[in-house]
Amino acid sequence: MEKVVLAYSGGLDTSIAIKWMAENYRVDTIALTVDVGSNDKDLSKVQERALKTGALKAIVIDARETFVNHFIFPALQAGAIYEDSYPLATALARPLIAKLLVDVAREEGATAVAHGSTAKGNDQVRFDASVMALAPDLKIIGPTREWKMTREQEIDYAQKHDIAIPVTKASPYSIDVNLWGRSCEAGVLEDPWTEPPADAFGWTKSPDQTPDEPLYLVIDFEQGIPVALNGQKMTGVDLILKLNDLAGEYGVGRIDHVENRLVGIKSRETYEAPAAVVLLQAHQALEDLTTSKDAARFKKLVTQAYSDMVYNGLWFSQLHQDLAAYVASSQRSVTGSVRMKLWKGTSMAVARKSPYSLYNFGLATYDKGDVYQHDAAVGFIRLWGLSQQNQASAQVLSPVDAVKSMNPPRDVKVAK
Ligand code: ARG
Image 1: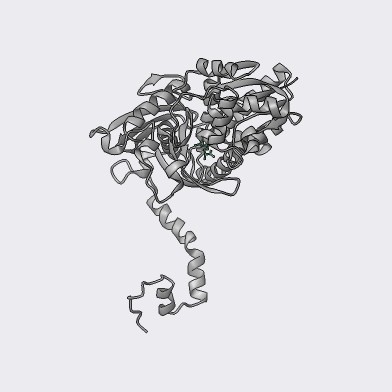
Image 2 (image 1 turned 60 degrees about the vertical axis):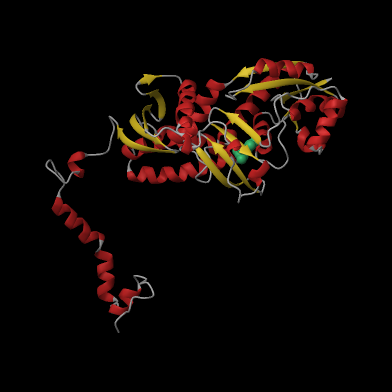
């Protein structure tokens, strides 16, 4: 029999998928569970369940380090955020899982890969497009988007085929978790006029239940990569885990977003991304200090293109490779420390320093030590305003027009 490698989470969908693919595609399933930091799961249990459910083989890969170093941190350096809101946790993990599906398919001689994403989401696009780029010859099966069963029918199917239904208590939401964030949708969240209820959140305290005193944190960066927290060096995985805990305790990182999916749907999702929010802010604060004005403005264009590309599933594209190279190069001087203040659901950078700081006290100060050439300012403005001055003397504006061009509010009387 031909073999398929399935991205297996241990939930109802992927558990049924093993039997369903055997019946409908006559394939043996190799279940692959990728650990990208789904914090509360005992993955050996998931592995056991895959075997009980009929998988030929069940493989677990701890990919947290790869996820952080090759996906999360490059995205942090890029300042990646979708539609100014979503730090892209789910979107970043998909190409990595796709890559591992392909690797395992090659090792095991499988002819197809499979995933449990629905036909309405972005995730199917990310899986499929990544596999298409990495292994154009592999078939892709998406059982959940093919079988058109309701949840009730899925449960019936499981019972009929003796598939143990996962014992986790059924959540009213669809939740996806990894180190960079927790994504939560469906249930009452489908009404964008309903405030997310308390049970939509799992990582963060409600800001009204957080400590009254602020928490200060110092984050050290080397070339745009966070390397230490409060002076203590740590691995990326540990730093993110620690920050998720700390910032979550202070209610930081809650996001309520109506977003534009690639497949044409507007959807409402809540995110919790305590570490991502704090690190993106801190990183931006350090770039503000160390990046020239022109480079900073250009970086914004790159950030926008990069974020859309990640969201839209084009990680393994040529454009990504080229943007990533730009981003990496842009981080040469993004080294230094940022002090963050966390309080009641907010976080902000309150201090920053860098050996490569472009902040020049002598140029900036209004006090003693001023080295700025004041008369140069006068000369500069003479040329800066020259074109306007020239136009004004050639094409005389009436005083009435001049005032109108200021868009005066209606109740301002303009003298004739
Ligand atoms: N909307 C997010 C994205 O497209 C998250 C998708 C998965 N969300 C979930 N709750 N299962 O990246």
